[in-house]
Amino acid sequence: MKYTRLGGTELKVSVVAYSVYGLHGPYEGLSKRDLAKLVGEAWSAGINFFITAPIYGREALEALREGLGKSIEDAVIGVLVGYRRGGGQSFSPEFLAESVEEACSVLGKCPVDIVFLHDPGLETLRSPALYEAARSLVEDELASYIGVAISQDLDALQAARTAMRHEEVAVLRFVYNVLEQEPGATIAREARERGRGIVVALPHAGGLLLGETPSSWEEMEPYYAGGKRMRGWYRSALALYKFMEPMLREELSHLLEENTLAQLALRFIYSSIPVDSVEIAARSPSKLRELVEAAEKPLLSKEDVGKLVELYQRGRMQTT
Image (cartoon, rainbow, N blue to C red; front, top):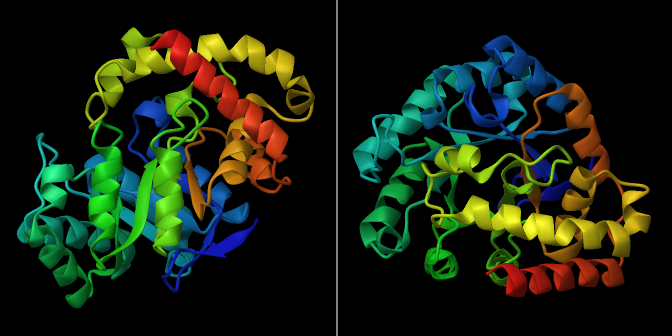
C-alpha cells in the first residue's frame, strides 16, 4: 500500500480510504459482523484511512470500532457530520458538537482526525458562522482537522472555491470518476495549488464502474436522492456509461486485458488528477483485494488518460 501526507496536515494516509456506510446501499444484506470483518480486512491490506458518519447509523460506527479493535488509535478516522437522522441538515455549533461527541463515544477515539462538514451547500459555506463552529470543534479537541465534503450539484465548483478561502478547511472531499470528470478535475487542481488535502468519493459512480451489471436508474436514483446530487444524475451517468463502454473496450482493450473495469476506474483517478486518497466501498474481501491491487499498479500513460477524457467529452456531447 502507498501512503501520502494529506495536504498540509500532519496525517499520513493510505491512498485508498475505506467507506464505512450503514448496512444499506453498498452493504445491503450484510450484518454488522460482516462489515466489521471487512474493516479488519481493509486494515490488514494496508488501508489506514476510514470514513464514516453518525447518519449512517450506530451500527456503522460500532462495526468500524470492532473491526479495528486497538488499531483504531493508529488509524486515521474521518467523520461526516451535518445531516439529521430525521431528515434535513444542521450546521449549528451545538448539532455539530453533539454529532462528533456521539462518534467519539462509540468509536472510543477523541479527537477524531478529520471532521468533514457534509454537503453544506453554497449558501451555508458563505456564512462566517460555519467556520466559527468548525474552529470550536478543533479548540474543544473534538477534531484535529476540518474538511468539507462537496456535493455534486450545479454549485460544486463555486462551493469548493468558497470553502478553500477559509484557513479552517484543511481537506476537500468531492466526487470524481470516469463518468463524472467535471468539476472534480478542476477542484482537484485548485485544491492542490492551495495546499488542501484531496479525497475523492464515489470513484465507481454509484457502482456503474465496478464491472457488475449496472442497476437501472429507477432503482438507484432514490437511494442517492438523499444527498445533494442533481436530479436525474444516475440516469445520465448510466446513459454515458452505455455510450462509452463499447468504445472503451475497443479503443482501450489493452488496458482491460490487464485490469478489471473497477481497477481501471481507480487507476484513471490516480493518473489524471492530484489526489491523496480515494474512498472505496467493497462488500467482499475479494473485491477489496481487487481495488487495493489497482492502487499499487503504475500510473496510466498520458495517452490512455487522454483517451478516457476524450471518450467522456464525446459521450457528454452525445448524451446530454
